[in-house]
Image 1 (tube, rainbow, N blue to C red):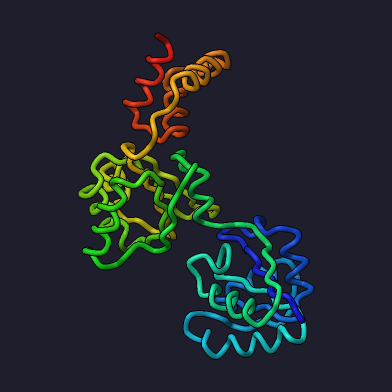
Image 2: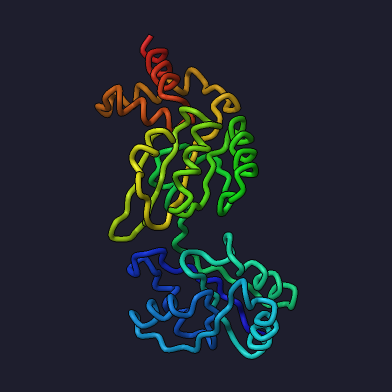
Length: 272
């Protein structure tokens, strides 16, 4: 019985592939790729010449039986167009089918656009909600954003450059003044991370291009108030390390999911 390896591949920079991922791709009897053209670029870079089979939303119904038959003979590696397979990706059906057929499914972790965006946004990460691509219909998008107003989790979503401005306008209407990060072309030559409000982002992105991940902060009202003693201890440590008030405020915003005004109040309260 072969194993299905779920192999994360770079989201842009080909140097982000792991040593383990390269070994698994070399040793697998078959590589099932969402886009064989994209996969070939990576494989050519690292001199890997294994057989490729396309597996995507359009052909998954007929490909799953084929791949299961290959798994009966040996290991198969699954790769997506970019990043981690089965995350907002047709790979999830193959993973489920392989498990149901009794095959071991093994993660080969690595790049993920959603996690990469979270790591550089500077917004709270203790809990987050990933929704894949945002709804295209205006009404569905509005309902999702209105729901986000009262949720404490940071929202992470993919968006196309063609719809970015309309989405930012919807965010501004539903969540005025809410902080967000627009992470564009992560790990690529023209990588950009813009942090501010939706209104500010609209002024900045007049002609957006490239792949986009949106990170939107959660609702402050639903976040528990931090313990006074814990905040005082954190502020004291920040002062000992020589942080300025502005730097400490930014850290408190990230740590507790607070607004800038609330973070400043925490600083002042700890000083008292």
